[in-house]
Length: 312
Length: 269
Image 1 (spheres, each protein chain N blue to C red):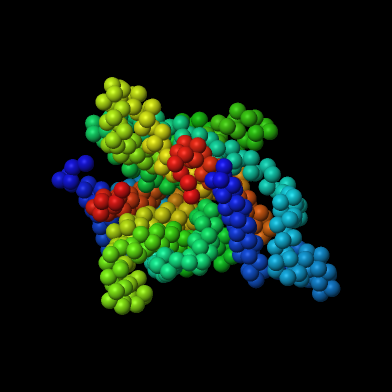
Image 2: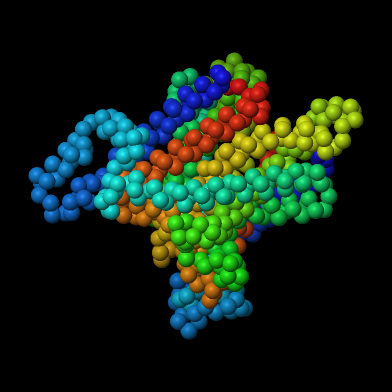
């Protein structure tokens, strides 16, 4: 319980710092939003009025807390280039990116854990060595190149989907998932290789421990030891790794969306960066950072359930 | 684990990295064709002896462009790793050795920075500075500082109470002397493997940014940029994507294996 409270306080502090850093970064840039909103030929009086209305004349900390208050209540400001609330702009797209990232995360977990266990069981034999070499190579493949290859193989040759022809979930959920599964695989594959390699090493290390010998001396079989004792300990570092992977999944999805022309958060972020639409960029950056921080918090909590020895 | 076994990671990593760097250095002085020479008659030629990797949409020799682009990528990676490493050593070394509330504050900031997916951080910095080779170097350099700083710090925290540091202190060595001449050399194996991993991340990040069109600007060639160009011609010229992509894979593979090899050599974990 003490651990839980301590972690929660750290979470809140981290969220504060994250939002502060992001807000600070977008405040120091020498860009005048009034020029974007009113055009270059606006009269000085109108510019002054708008600056006052947007609160640009307030001191920095006042602006930060006003922004934070509005942000938490769901008001993320107005886009400079679309003139609609940022929230409406993001609402739809976050669902697409979240679905894709979630699919990738599920794929990573359901593929890497069995693979890692299988490899550790067969450690030292030829099939394991072959998979180890393949893993090592797959780890080095950038997800976006994998995405391009998948577009070529599954899209252009096997025609399982049409690259560039994204179907929204409102039109056809089946086609939506069918389209997203390919980018999800492209994100997941290198991560599956890394995670299974890590789990394999972790299990092999644990098998050398004294408690394994004790369990064996009491007549337990290999399978019972592996699933009853070793796996629980071996998964601890792997869970940390998967938690860290979440940030990477989100980062790769920004690029992967470009490969598969998916209109998600990544695409919106890139467009907003190139049109200098800072309220949108700020909102997306803060949302993604919040999600990542929060997932890491959940992982930390989960960690304590699996390994109660962990304390701060 | 038997210790007589060859360190295959180290061997393969060193060989791949050496060959790639050699090719890039040669490509810096000489390429079979000029990387920017346009030849309208030879558009989309497949791989042949005249053009090892074929030609692209403007009839440029892809092999020459890959060498040139890999050079840009390597230059950016070396610069960013250097920025991250040097700043990381300064921050991590000082905070780790002295500790105290500054250490606490800096590490909290560091933790928050790592909360941003590193790619996002780079995107934000590029969004503020604008695209271009040098801005990419700054963005990626900043992106690498937190991880290097954290790693150096933990090494310093581990080392600062060891006997050799205590004896150096007894001999009235100053803190700066202890930090840079006594402790730093002892962290080299951890640092080296982190540098190799850093290279791997830098290549990946540079390729990613340039692929998105906000990294290296044309006419300068870069592997990521070429990959994004090649995607439009995926059907008519698949060799363009494949040769560029495999160059990236080989670069990353070399650095990953090298990092792994150094770790095994040092007997870490």
